[in-house]
Image 1 (tube, rainbow, N blue to C red):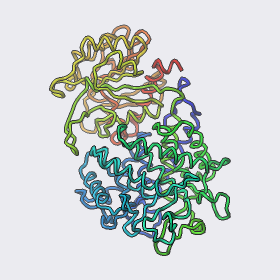
Image 2: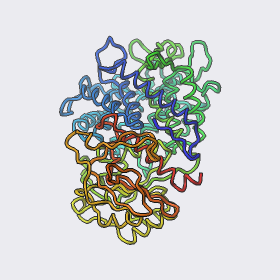
Image 3: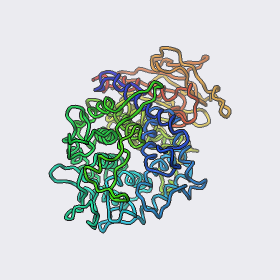
Image 4: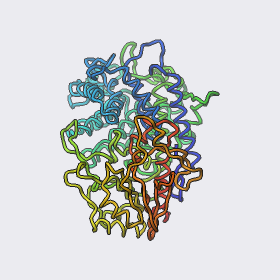
Length: 640
């Protein structure tokens, strides 16, 4: 994991972040070692489609994105593939007619796999889960029953099982009505379960008030169970991430999150940063600090701060919880694997034998080591704590990606709407830049995207500006070629301290004439050639060796760049990396600004996210190094 402490930008101890990363990766290694064939904690049972797997999958997805280690992705894919049919129309052991919200959780992984691979089977399987929600039994106000067998009941747990998936599906289908339904689930359960005195939420609510555990006036269960509160918080931040900023209910959900966080921090132990399993009986005999809930609370606060939904004042309690968890519950074994202690195996309401939600019931449930729910929440927490620690003290460096000169469009396969694709931030397939966006987030930078021609106003908001592979006529019917006014605006911006990244392409895929007018202002020319032609998977044909101690790539030995245009340079440009007499990368200092150029888009997902390249080819690390160098050279970083 990268260590992002440069130029005084960041407000944390870099060695502490290295520990966070190591803990998360060791826990992932534990998962992948102990559960090679299935994700079933209790080996006496056959593997079934289960929500605890989904908690692990979410942790490994985040870890994959933040490390570029494709093994995490492959692990998820291999296990999901064991459950879904070749055409995606059936899921082994899943029964829609059970109407169990727990069975929706793995849908997060299905949607991730579809976005990355484009394989229709994942979308069809996800749509099967979506169809359950569309016919799922509800309360009179529209709240989902937790399960068909738990009639008229909403549990906090159910919000985590269904709503992040539901919100992601709504995002992908552009369905405003579904966003409204997602919001309503959070609003309803807070309305019915929130205790006015403490702000805490009761574990469950029975609309019928018939359950023995239900208060006959309110329908609420009698106690505040920590993990139920943890599920709800994680659900809020995970679902909110997918809501459009202009959604009419987003502000209300953010307000709920802030009320929630206030209540959670009030009952956080002031000494160790942890929470009691039954939150309304701190210190009572038999009560104990519970690991999974603490991980969930830390995750929720860290992610809420990172996304701007919670004030930065929640950074301290999140980090305090993280430290307390590592001290109280974490043990590293001789084989470097980890044990997470202190997770209650399960707690529920009703059923047979009957669970009455009393204090005595909650503390009677078995506490175990390396429970999947706790382990998954721990990995997710480590991922978010890493990102939280990377946040700068002040305004972040902004990296602006051009979507005007590179403006390819296609029909969205789900909605049929026209969308921009190819080298855009929020594109998870091979041709997207989502991995690069994650890297920048991990470096404490912000990202933005523009479909407008560059001008002084647009560029004034950018510290780093990326132009990648401007369109040819075969890519866009009416390309937006670089014009004199564009070049002047960019040149002046660089002179004033802007950092410009030019990512070209080779002769078969590039627009050279207009792009070189801009590059030439800085002494750089993209040659009309194509070097490192690669046959099949013969990666050695595209391998380049970086010399030790390289100023821009200090952590890299080998990179992979195929079918690239070489460069010609003159003053003020200089070679940043050459190979066998060819200039591969160039740098130019102009006024107060900096320009970096290479003749290939290079840093797109296919060659950065770890799914394709052998481990010796360090494109992910090189992307980290280059982004760190660009940020360090930005005027905002220099000011700090």
